[in-house]
Image 1: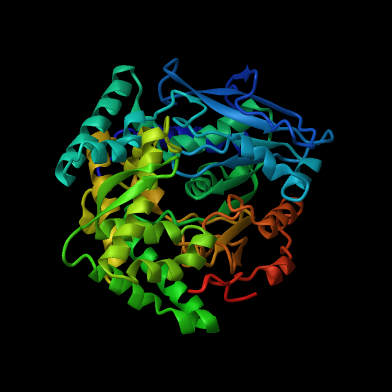
Image 2: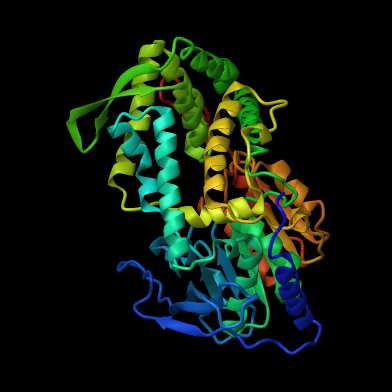
Length: 521
């Protein structure tokens, strides 16, 4: 890693904040700026009477510079139904660069989901610096439309990469001309933001929930601010000891494909109908003669078709996408057979429509779900990607390597563009702690497979790992009611063993078969 230029300043900030937990005088809490109307509101038809407020917590951009620039962190607070002194639940999104402050957030707190949490405690949804409801918002709108522009202008792969670099450079340079210090958008600063938000909103201690990257951020919070935590929930997590954001991509996808094969073989009807490894191999072989020319239809204008060439990289991306959600996983063998059924013709037709609908979405989208430049700054300060050679290749098959190499090449371009200093090596050490921790994992998770969660749990002395046999990536995001019941239990008594009776009802609903029926009905 490159030396972290602000290492001394970060260490000093950590020493001061750790000192607070041992009796030193606390620094003045950051100010709060109310926002009305709120960033988002419940749907008009909701029957739940939510009490909530929104605002900004105003924190220093660089905590080592007194009186310097500030960052405004958006928050949405759901108030407890009764007056309470129970520690609140802080919830942070994944990405990095995502936001949980969306209208559907209210739906998670319906009575049948996480509604009981509000009986005893507040819930604070906090946006990480640089994301949608913060000032500044470090997005790069042109980047989200890049795939459509590359298609529309018929750019070669080399020209598309060059355009991507120019777009990102323009966005990065634009933020730097505004005086924004991108080196301060990293996991250490984000962890300190959580503590500042806690103090600003008047809480002594909190529970922390993080999804995906938010669960990695939670481990930084555990390391730097343990005294404020009553408990931590990590939903879809990986260990901090990873040295590159792409090193595990191929072997994680390989693991997921093997898991899919195992699940299919355990299902009598799926086993009789499909050979998953053979279908993937057949699909890849169809591109040995090169890209496939095909066309796709705009669903909003069925009389209009668009010509397109699809490649084996598109095939790998499609497989990875379907591994990311339950219906996708359970229909993937069926879809693989459908694509390969008539050779290059069926592969071209099916893959063209899949890719085409994503191109049209990019054309029509006003922006993306992730704040691009914030994503770049966090990833490239955490574990920057310098070469596709960082991908661990041993034990990975052709398709996982295709996908991982594509991701690596894009991250190399991002990290070369943003040029932020790396965090110190100490941040790449797995956290050792006795803070009560609930770790949620899905057996079907292709992004953070269960063995990653097991690695995290290995250094946490008070960790409980719950694996959902039908779960994919991030249980709360998938509206897993069993996971929500377990979370509610944990919040009531974080040191007690959670009851997992509801797991007995969590089983795979069945694979889609060639005749359209489901294998388990």
